[in-house]
Amino acid sequence: MKGIVVRIQGNSYVVKVDDEKISCTAKGVFKFKKMQILVGDNVEVDMETKSITKIYPRKNEFIRPPIANVDQLIIVVASADPSPDLMLLDKQLVMAEKNGVEPIICINKIDLDASYTDIIEVYENIGYQVITTTAKNGIGIDKIARIINNKITAFSGNSGVGKSALTNNIFNEDVAIEGETSEKLQRGRHTTKHVELYEFAKNSFLADTPGFSSFDVDGISAKELAEYFIEFNNYIPDCEYRSCSHVKELNCGVKKAVSKRKIDKGRYERYVALYEKMKGDKKW
Ligand SMILES: Nc1nc2c(ncn2[C@@H]2O[C@H](COP(=O)(O)OP(=O)(O)O)[C@@H](O)[C@H]2O)c(=O)[nH]1
Ligand SMILES: [Mg+2]
Ligand SMILES: [Zn+2]
Image (cartoon, rainbow, N blue to C red; front, side, top):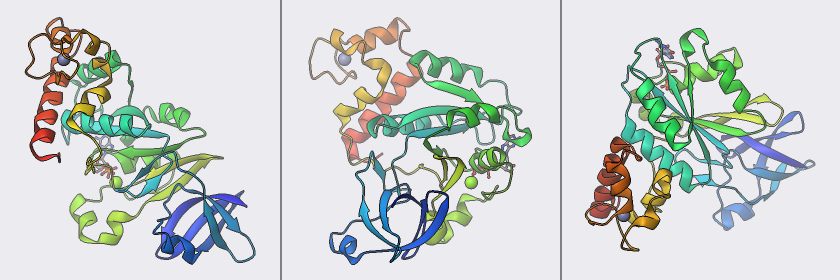
C-alpha cells in the first residue's frame, strides 16, 4: 500500500495510508544504501510486516529541515517584532526557486505596523503572491486555507514571525507550540530536527518546521544566483557579456533596468551583496 510519511521518531516512521496512521519500521536495505527516509516521502508499506519497502522518487528534498516533496513554501515575515528581514526573504526565495517549490510571501502581524505596503508592491511587481495576515485574531487565515489545498506546504521564516500562531489558527486548535524561543529550540537537537506533517484536508498537509532559516547553499554558484532573482531574466539578454555578473560590468541589462526602476533597487542591492558573499566564501 502506498502512503506518506508524516512523522519520524527514532527508528519509527508514522505513515498515513488511506485514513489510517501506521507506525512502521524500515528495511535494513535503506541503511545499507545510506538512504534517509524523510517526512513527506511517498512510500510503499508492507501491511503485514508494517515495514517500508520502497521510497518513491522525490520532487525535492531538504536537509535542514529534513523534509521531502514540498510543493509550496509560505515565507512569513512580520510587519514588526521582528522587523522584516528582506535579505532573509530573498535568500529563501532563491532556495524555493532552485528547488522547484512555489513560494508565497505572507506578511503577518499587520496589526503592528502599516509600512508593509512597500514590501507588497516590490514583490507583487516581480510576480510573487503576497498575502497579509494577523494570526492573533484570525485575519487572512481563510486566504492561507485556500492555497494549501491538495499540496504539501511548509512555513518558513525567522523565529517569532508567527508561523506557529498561523498553523494553530488554520487548524483551529493548538497543534504547534507558540512563542517557543529559538534559544529553546536550539538547546535540544531533537526538537530542532522535529518535523511533522499535519493533515488539513485530504491530501493537504502543512509542515510545522523549526524554519528554513539556515540554508545549505553549497549547491548554488554565484553565477546561478541571478537566474533565481527571477525578475532579472527579462533583462539579462541585454547584457553585453554572456558571462555578465551584473555587478561591475558597464553595459549590463540588469543595471540599466535598475536605473530605469524596472528592477527594484533594494532587490538588486541584496543580489550584489549575496553575489559578493558567495564569491568570497561560498557560504552565505
Ligand atoms: N501582534 C501580533 N502578534 C502575533 C501575531 N502572530 C503571532 N503573534 C505573536 O508573536 C509571537 C511569536 O509567534 P510564534 O507563532 O511563536 O512565531 P514562530 O516562531 O514563527 O512560530 C507569539 O507571542 C505570538 O502570539 C499577530 O498577527 N499579531
Ligand atoms: Mg514556532
Ligand atoms: Zn548584466
